[in-house]
Image: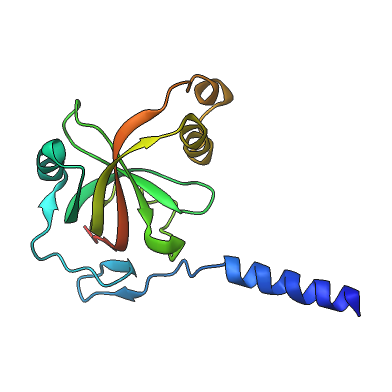
Length: 162
């Protein structure tokens, strides 16, 4: 009896930890939507967001940008990058861990909707992200200082079909 209860609880835990990795919808243009619906209307560029965040610690935003890296473990985070060399990258996580994005998303354009903010990321978290991103052991061990950076919690992601 106890064995059956353990098996049942294990099955429930496994199923609860699985989230749908398929798009919520595909638009007429072939764009894929993950999480909440995201339109292209009024999306600012990543560089505009960086400029607007220069004197703020947080703000709601809809942003169009290029994806840098994606978590190679689950697709549970991604970074956005600018075409400008000196611009910072921004880590994007997904509201309530409610959806993941494809792991091969690097280099593609997306529109994200949600909340931008500035945070200090701990050494432990930076190392975790580096590991999830497939960095070498040496690169991970070289992380020794926390980092203040822009971050974003997305309620939805639209992958542009370009």
